[in-house]
Length: 267
Length: 92
Image 1 (cartoon, chains in turn blue, green):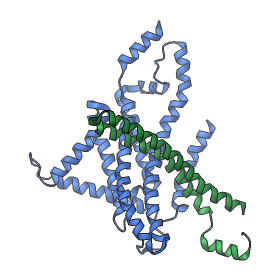
Image 2: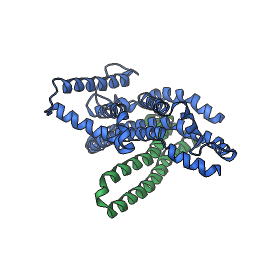
Image 3: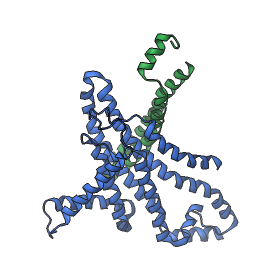
Image 4: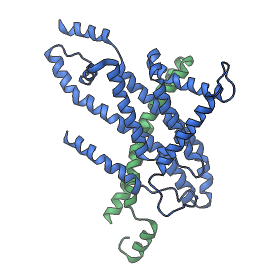
């Protein structure tokens, strides 16, 4: 258990280290830097850029809405219907109430990822702080949805699937408690590192290919650009799908199943 | 000199072995998805989503190893320093 606490105390060092230890690709992309030191706030400004883009598109698509959509409203309705299908695919009909949160996550992440392809821009998610903020937000929201669906009895989820009715099941629940807590707490870590590693690694590959291989480098790097598009879209989808699965696990109601198991273990 | 040799081997082989495990894992996942698709071609939508999800989860483990390699890479000297060290005979 003490190792677990040490890891949680060194996480801020990991966050601080990503700004200094990892080489910066701003100078390697060929865009002349305006100052000697890149500002540590540039990733935050790219996340604000994604927010502004999404806000402008949202306002433009919902002005003077028609019953039969045309143009931008038509396209945005297609996007919304597709993204709202993600929680419905994971949880069925009750997933619809979580669709706004998951759609926000998906659209925000995909706009941030894809903005790294624009010359002069970097993906906002190429910084561990941005992805960790997204993952911590998703973690807090999963706990909130769990408490909203189950009330204070949500904490009984951490004792495992067996209801605590007699002594053997209580012992099993206490044994499962650290395992469940650990797997719950490692989820935001894996979410943030997966998104950060994919996007940051992709742009590192392209920048190293473009600069370190002489004259043929940029041509090989251009071939990798469609892979960056694919990775951006895929990682946004994977992040959203995983958060939808975590919400489904936290809010699943199977009282009937619990009653059967309780009856089976009581006799 | 042992320090540089060990560090270079760790960076190179670490990511390589992680990629090896990832290749085997993702190959098994895609094989399962293709077998399901061969049995029931009309389920390709659901199968695609689960396959992509599984592949991304397996790939994330290799990404962790790649991140470790990126963390270790600044501790290797840059080529100019290596040239100077080779000239001065400190390493060979």
